[in-house]
Length: 146
Image (cartoon, rainbow, N blue to C red):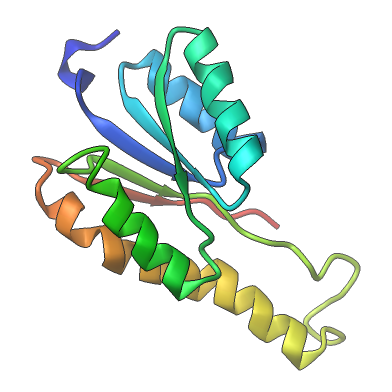
């Protein structure tokens, strides 16, 4: 464990499964306190328990990146976890357009995808910026897949 990472906090959206969960586990192995952010309360708490069972430090934070209200509430609730944020990983996203192309996707489906995958992470960065500014070397990482 890197002693420089002790007491450092990383928030990972969509960390209850897949790439987000693996990222959270690896950050814990490097000494970070990981905030598992997700829109599903039960799977988020299960992910936290799995991380803790492997010796990591993790906390669940309810956050649905497609909802402005949820994002604002999560930023307020984060104050109970920490006063600063060293790493923000925007991993949460949706892929509702499987089987479609840019030439066939309906406009309303495209708007919904942009709301979650583009505007959601931007709004999240705005909401958590006060915590990022308190870190000595903050990082924002955006994960994309297709």
